[in-house]
Amino acid sequence: MATKAIVGTKIGMTQVWDDDNRVVPVTVLSVSPCRVVQIKTPESDGYSAIQVTFGTRDPSRLTRPEAGHFDGAGVPPGRKVLELRLDDVSEYAVGQQIGADLWASGEKVDVTAVSKGRGFTGVMKRHGFKGQPAGHGAHKVHRKPGAIGQCATPSRVFKGKKLPGRSGAARVTTLNLEVVKSDFEAEVMLVRGSVPGPAGGTVVVRDAVKAA
Image 1 (cartoon, rainbow, N blue to C red):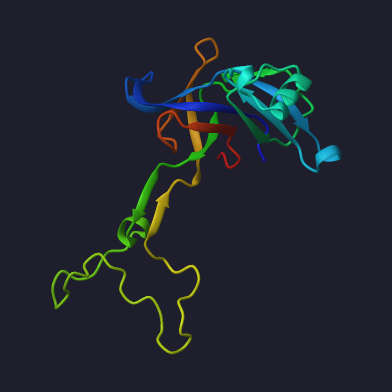
Image 2 (image 1 turned 60 degrees about the vertical axis):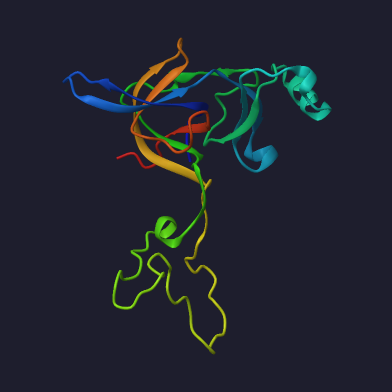
């Protein structure tokens, strides 16, 4: 499990140059300071985590339970409330702010987000099927999956069979991405490579659990 984490927003991709004048593709993440709303411990909740919020929200738009939750913590209401599972929460306190300075350049992180939704897709796009022959009598079946099961026995299609369906819009984690730059004042983090999700999507950044 992670030892530190933060929530951000994906802005998009660009490129920077390293010390050897080589192009480095990076994803720009907007990381506004996260405010700790609640701390969960194994003794009281059965697991350790911190509940955070970020951004601002009009208090008049909150429900009474939401308003009471923020008032009890003494934290200004934010746009979203997310829970970050951590190994140790002893160093955190309610009302504490967590910024982009959690990581320095060169450190490895894991980024989790909901991938782009692709809608209803066929087996070639969804599962990488190669398709059926272009000739040899194949007629209007070039992108179809082909046979999907037996006949009389068992007279059904097994669960888990790869078939057409909705693709994307799933929780995806990209591992071992390098932090190229982290600017607390500008509330920006540059991560080498691509991260899941569309521009404007919420991402969770954790320290890499499988770092080499």
